Length: 565
Image (cartoon, rainbow, N blue to C red):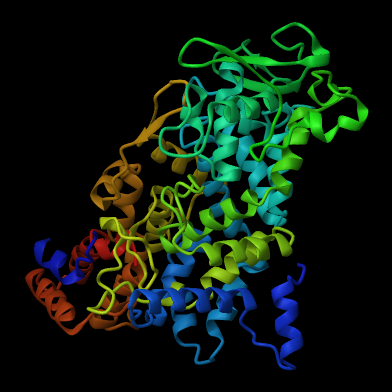
């Protein structure tokens, strides 16, 4: 379990109303400004605390909560001005106001940037479009997602566009469709990865290993994998091979003749472990077959491989959207993003074999999410305004047993410490140091991708595996992030945050130290930390810029900086 290291130690070292909302509005003439779904979260989680004999931690400080919500919604820490604007607000609804600002037009570009990063990594991995063997056009995937999040496109619409996409993955082509990048690297071996990742991401089903055999520990069966795979058999990849430096793909749909050669009964075959062949047709994970859905048009019509009869991926998108698994998987994933752990672990392996920690809450939130027309910002808002999200990360004797890091079920009686993601660390360093002030958006993104690419490696196997060497340490980050840029920012040179503070004659030395603490840690220094800083100043012979540089470097090297707490 991570423990926060103090800065002292390191300096010394060097849309629609849902049914629930409507009910609340009719019950009270002056409705609670906090969403009814948030109150549901609080009620359910408190009940679980009581059943487990736990008492929650105290609330996080204003500064801690502010830093947390900026990190989770925008992917970066707040600036000093943003932090002070929030902490100086004395109104009782300031959390609500800040969340609405972060989800509103004022921060729309940053909101879309952050969630584009999160979902690009989820859909195509950190190496998709970066590794030389990838057919993904990463900029095309990002462009599609950025526009979707800017418009707050309903989640079911996003899913449909990704699962059923056709067209070129490359921006600028006449038939460009950025959503097509989701499948660009997933159609090898008849779409095994398309089957696995679609099930995993949109249904919360980890079915990868069932392509070869029934799962030994849960209810997933081999036939279910191949029946899902049948939905992708009309899908083809057209590769651009003209230029090895400009590889990209085009997703197209074609009639599928079936492995038996008869497109009116377009079947596929898979092999059991004993060598016996079995046949599969398009059947959804809940047992709904296309043959049954279209039985009124003929016994075999739903199994047709002719696009003029059935578009299998389009049918799959409809079945996913109607499934109760679809909103549950997204609620679980989003809960994991904001709280550090989902209701299940892993977050994308749900089912009777892996019961959720709070089953009733998961089910009700899934219903509310569907009732909101799959409004992603609403779902985020419900969660970050809740009491569990606002708790301190400091444990007490009343809840020290609530530690999922050692295997216990998460009860969310305190905020779970977690390391920043590589992208969050990058953006937070830039906010703290102002190291990119002179760069254009394109230069900034190129620099960011170049830095991130150094951590990631694609395995090149049939599971689209990849690994990252990112371990979250600031020394690692500072050494690798275009050294000249960060070196300039952490030295006292014009344009850097450190220079602004050091050269500000209106600030006393203790006030300058305070500015550094606010920028890096979202808090003021404690008395002993100020005393140590003064000793550093004395050791530097009163040379303020050099002393501030020492303190600044130490602050950026603390666990307190790199952790979301």
